[in-house]
Every structure is written in C-alpha cells, then in structure tokens.
Image (cartoon, rainbow, N blue to C red; front, side, top):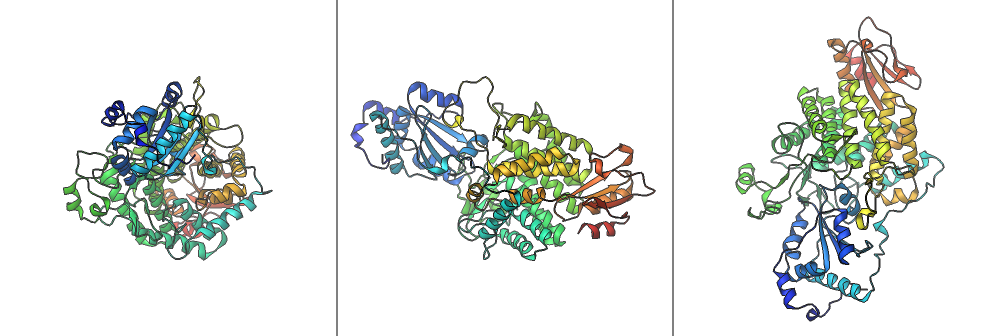
Length: 600
C-alpha cells in the first residue's frame, strides 16, 4: 500500500464529517488504556510524540492538526494520542530514532503500521490517513517494514572486551569532524560523553590528538551558547555550529558543565570556568527553584506553546538584548523537576566544585538532592517527577546514581555511597531483563497484557552503557567485585559489531566504561580527621585531578574501616595522601603541591 496516494474526497464528505471538522482533535493520554480503546472500538491509533520546547512540533499543531479535514478523519477513524516525551521517558525511548515531532500509526491490535520523522504538511498527512482508513476497510493493513523500529538482540561477536572497545574507539575516531570539531557532520550536537571519553583517552594513551579534539570541540561549541542569557542551545541544524536550534535542555547544560569543569582541571585554562559561569548564570536566573532542583527545558520560541502569548520566532527573539527579550515575554519553561535531569545537575555542580572549591555549588547540589529525596524517592528508587506513578524509569535511576557518586566523591560522605549502592541494587531488582541488560522501565504489576507501544520495552544502548560506567565507579569506591562483574556483563552484551555500528557517533559512555573495565582503578586516598584544615587542604588538592579512572577518597580513621577494604590506613601523626594503584601505594604526600603533582 502506498499511503501517499490521494483518494476521492467525496468518499468521506458527509454532514457528520462537516460537523467533525469544526471540533478539535480529541487527544487521549499516553497510556495503555488509550491503546486498549483503539482495540475495543476497532480504530486505528495515532501517536504524536512531541516536546513542548520543539519548534516543529508547534508548527505541526498549528498547520497540520488544526486542518479541518484532518481533524474530521482523526475524530471518526482514530484514537489520537499525544505523548510529551519529557513527561513520558518511555515514549522518548520508543520514538527517539524518528525525532520530534514523531508520528506513528498502529492497527487496532497494536501492530506498528507507520512511522515518520518530523513535520508533515497537511495535504500529505491527509493522504496518509485516508490511505490507512481505506486499507483498514479493505482488510489490507500491513506491518511497518522499517528495520530501525525495533533494535535486534544481536549476540556479542568479540571474544574479548578489548576488541569491542577498539572498534568503538575506531568509530568515534571516524565520526570526529576535524574541520568543525564535535562528532558527526550533518548536525552538530554537544555530546558530553564523547568529550569526556576523548579526555580520558588522551590521558590513558598519552595522545595529544584526543586532548586537542576535546578542547577544540568545547571551543567550537561556544557558537551554540547564548551570548546574552548564557546556556547552551540544543544543537546546530547544519554542518557548522552556526545554524542554531534554540531550545535549552537542562540535561545538556549539566553535561556541558561537567566537560568545562574537566577541561579546566586538565588545562588550568580559566576561560573554561568563564564558560561555566555563563551557564550557571542562565540556570540560576531561569531554571533553579528556590526550594532546590532545576526545571527541565526552555522553549525555542515565545508563544509556541501558549497561544495567549504573541508568537516570536527563536531566530528573532534570541537576536535581542536582555531588555528586548524581556519586553517580548519569556519562552515557556517546563517547571517540572525530573529525577534524571536533577541527578545530572547534582553531578555537574559537584564536578564544578572540584575545580573551583566554591561551597555554594555544593549547597545547590545538596538542595537538588533534598528535593528529589522528599518528592521523588519511593520504594528505594526515584520516580520521574512528582506526578509520575505508573512506572519507574531507568534514566531517572542513572541520573540520580551519577549525582550520588559525584557528591560522595567531592564530600567524602560515606552515607552517600551507601545510598548509591542501594540504588544500584534497586536497578538490578527492578530493571533486569533476564538476559543481561537493563530495561528502560519497570514492568506493570498485575496488569492486562499491553498492546501497541506499551508492549515494547527496550534495553537502550546508551543507558546500559552509562549503567556499566557507573557500576565501575561503584567498584572503584567500594572494591566490591560484584559491581565490576555486572558492568562487564553489560558491556559484553552491548559489544556486538552491529550494535556498536548502529550507535554511530554516540559511543562515549561505552568507550569510557570499556576502558575502565579493562584496568584497575587508581585511588587518591586522603587520610586524616575530616575537620582538620590540613586534611581538607589535601582533599581539595586531590579533587583537582584530571586523571581518568581515579577515585578520590577521604578517609577519617575515626570513622572505622573504609568502604574499600584494600584502602585502610592506620592513624597518622598528621594528615597525608596516598596514590594507590596496581597493588601498591605511594609514600605519604603531606602537601597540596605534592598531591597535585601526583594526581597529574
């Protein structure tokens, strides 16, 4: 069936149809019940996967879903579902490969019939809908044949993890843009995990080329930062960094801050801290909540979401100075505080505090954690937001695990490490798919068999790569072999040639995790009373290290044995630090200068 052929309009014109044209689309919520409604009523199911910050999603609503004939077709023949991909991470996972707006059509039995990337003009979309209506009438509906819709479980093809790592690193090498910086050339995204992986490869291999790639990328990304309010925009549409798409996602700000903090630790270049200050200025002014935590996104345009506000295109709005922008109104801010985003922000603030020593950053990180604990924590895990109760999502657990580990490292508080271990155990209990990977969401309990989109629960590559990396950090801090073995199991499941090649440029987490799985971590252990100024001076010096796969540990002998039993030290006459690795430790380091030198 060719869904783009035109059908005689007269086939559908009736008095009832004319009445339907005047009514809005009866959007149903993203839920299993909406797919069940399609089955019960024997209707096709349409999903509009959108983001409130997405410019072309607004255009699709304004131009296509407002078309009277399209509204009539949807009213009569479809269950129409609108899925906000920020509110519903499972919708994000399912439709990420087609982007936003993403359009999917399912048969009444839940079979995928159609998937489309991006904006669809009204006339074209009307032909698509009419084609499927006629196919349903004739009993000729056929499943969507695109291979990209469902990732296949491909077995590992490498006998050792090093070979998988080498392929992933080669793919990262191949997709690096030597001219513009960054990874990929069709659109320019700030991929924080790749920048971090390149820094780690530079140090591990003593390869200045990888370091230059990270630094050049960060300098080039200044072109997609807001020169007035600060903050990094989502991406550049074209092959350079100068065709900006103006959404600002807080998760991207977090990754950018971590990269900038690491760049400063590696180079000492204060310009990277200036870049970070500009991002913080934006976050504190627009996204930070007084009681802790950060809002999720800022829209690309003014009035794209709220039709009571005069529309201002992002290209015009972001060309204005601050007074000019304020006069036109603000782009919509999604005020919801998602666990995934706030965990990433906790990690970013902790990383920046390591570089600057600013206690304000720690206070902001603690406030975000306090909010998440009070409002999102339940049954040992984190809900996506305060309203989400239908499931737990893997991305939220990973974000918060990242935040807990980063905050533990820069404070030395053992309670945070205990909580990180508890969250890892929750992940293993709730998300394991029985084959070695983590599912993207938890399974419904005592629910009817799901159909349509809810029958598919994926095991996302990037999330599982991040889980492997974080479990290795847990191993570095605790010495518990189970964390490393679980990480290696994940990496082996991800490490097939097909899966790695399918990831394209998005391989940074896998490369970092595979590198760390193939070697023992190093430890920089500061031993002394935690309130002693001499101990704190050594600890703050240790935190400035840019060495990869290094765990900085603050150990006060008065607290008893350390979490990692291999790193116990007797009480000392004065505070000292020890660089440990490969079964040995250095002689005591008793000055900040000596610690900095050892940590390079």
